[in-house]
Structures are given as C-alpha cells and as structure tokens.
Length: 237
Image 1 (tube, rainbow, N blue to C red):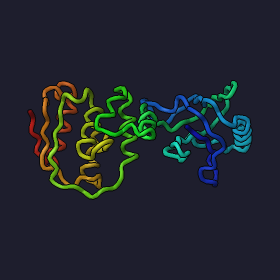
Image 2 (image 1 turned 45 degrees about the vertical axis):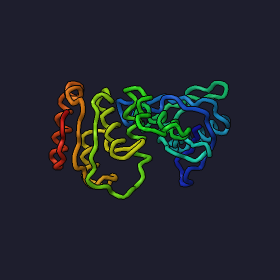
Image 3 (image 1 turned 120 degrees about the vertical axis):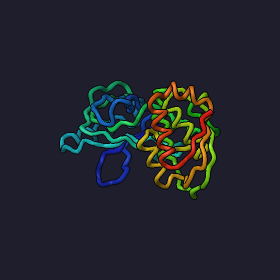
Image 4 (image 1 turned 90 degrees about the vertical axis):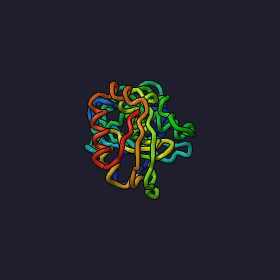
C-alpha cells in the first residue's frame, strides 16, 4: 500500500491511501519528468481538491510513501510540479518531476514487508535490471552492528550472472541475508573504509573466477585491484 502527502510544514500529513502506484522507478536517471499512475485512490476527491489548491499557491510538491502492513512509512518518493492529467473511476494519473529509485526497489520492499527475505540469494527472484533496486533497498535496511574482523569469505562465480549480482553476493557473504556492501566500485571503496559491519577481511577465495573474469571484463580487474589496495589477498580458483 502507498500514501500521499503534500510537502508542507506538517511532517507526513497523509491525505489519502493508495493501493498501488505505477511508474515510480527508473534505471536511466535519478530525476526526471514522469507520468505516475495511482491505482485505487481511497479518497480520490479529497486528494484531487488538495492538489488543485496546492497548484494555485505554487506549493504543488509532495511525497508518495510506501507503507508496511501497519501503515507505517518505510520509504518515500519526492515528486514536484504535480499536475493531474487523467482521472478515471478510482484512479488518478499525475505528471511531475520524480526523484527515482532504481527498478526493483519497491519489489524488494514488498518482499521484506511480506517476510519473504529469509535466506540468502532471495535477490535472485528479481530480474537482472532490478538488482540495483535490491542493492539500494539493502542499503536502506542496513542496521549498525559491531565491526567484525579477519573475515574469510568465498565468492562463487557460478552464483551470479552480472556485476550487480556480484555486489548482491558480496553483500550477503559479508553481512548476511539481505546484506549490503556496495553497489558499484565507489560504493565498495566506501564500504571498505567506513563502518559497514566489517573492520577487516583476511582473505577472499573467488571460485570459478574465470567465468567472472569473462563476464565482468574490466570490472573484474578493478574489483580485484581494489581488494589488493586494501591488503586483502584474493585467491583465484
């Protein structure tokens, strides 16, 4: 379930609830114009009225919130320059500039809300173009924990099929189910230098590395060189 609130001084002053929202994600840009469809708006007339009033005073920006089963906000998407472009039955289509999350982000949250993330590799239920969404989600649910030292981990090149799959695998090997440890080279560097639950890694064994080398190409070398930069031995098998 989703909810809508205007961007006002009243924090999360929800106007209405919405059963579902379409077109909130993008892998091409973080910010851009988009038409967003609200499916089954519970108090459609009230939302329409509030948006029309907001447009007249140029305060037509707000948030589309995703809710858990207790209607508590778990994540929010900002939208500005809102216009109502279509109204049919209980549905509304809005246009505006959206701060996008990657594809798969809300799907991962639904899985979490429904207690479906109970074992490693649940991320494999997502499509390849949705894995960045999983990784952003994993970063959102990350909880502070005592730094662990001298970790010995194993990576199996047969367990992932692209670079995002590698990051999903690495995150779970280091931080458990739904674990996060970067979603690109710069983020991996940050995780190695900051408080992400790991103080030191003693050794990484990369099984079936030839498959990964062929699959990841130059990124394979960038990753292994980064580990070496931090004094982490990488055993290639």
